Length: 282
Image 1 (cartoon, rainbow, N blue to C red):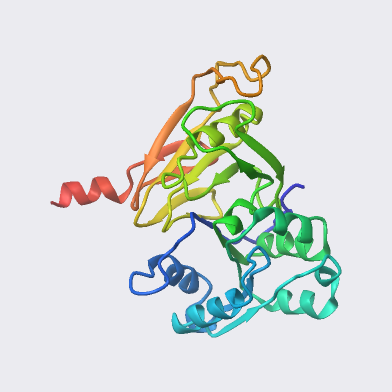
Image 2 (cartoon, rainbow, N blue to C red):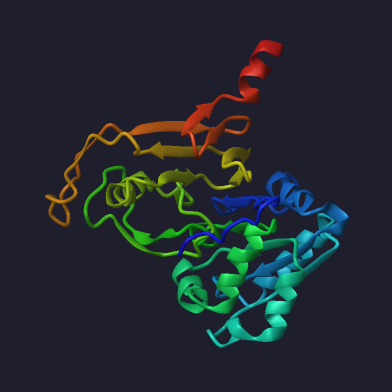
């Protein structure tokens, strides 16, 4: 699944993966910024709670986004693949200027929505300027290659990770969430050993990557983002390693970003951004 083509003269919408457990009360900077990005009072956000097993998840996010000032919020749940082809649901999504995926189980998202008219429409809407965000499982599904599940730990093995197709809004990165809290460096490195083209993005909880149409990643939230660049990978033993044996990876580049820092997914250059300016000002 390739991202939909942006029409000449148009601009792709922002892509906003969130590491999970984002603050929903008091320090709501991530969700507040998403509402503002979608237009504040003019924001028309569709919440997709399909990944969650909780019946009240959609209603909860409807309330949260409304409290943060969004003009209109609608939860659209999909229990079956047939739901994802219903005309009234497609028409509601066509009117949105923001789409938000809740957390839960990313494999439920991919098995219910993958290859359906709704999935195709979300890619098209993003290419036409609609902003798409997701938290936890909702973050994992956004890219072309999705981490379905894997093992915790800092060292990659051949069995550390299992990949599945995501929505395909972009093919530039692969996401892992709850990153530092659940010790997931090993499985992100294993995912990059299988696919060195992508940039690995490990999102801590209450931390988001606001990715602009020009592919510049801005950090928002209270945690950090671990960016793993495998573009200059010199050697990988993934093809030789047994299922539970550690994998040798040479030439990886790792950046740790916090709010104020940026990373360009096209040029693969990191910047201290406003952090350097703040240091000079002080």
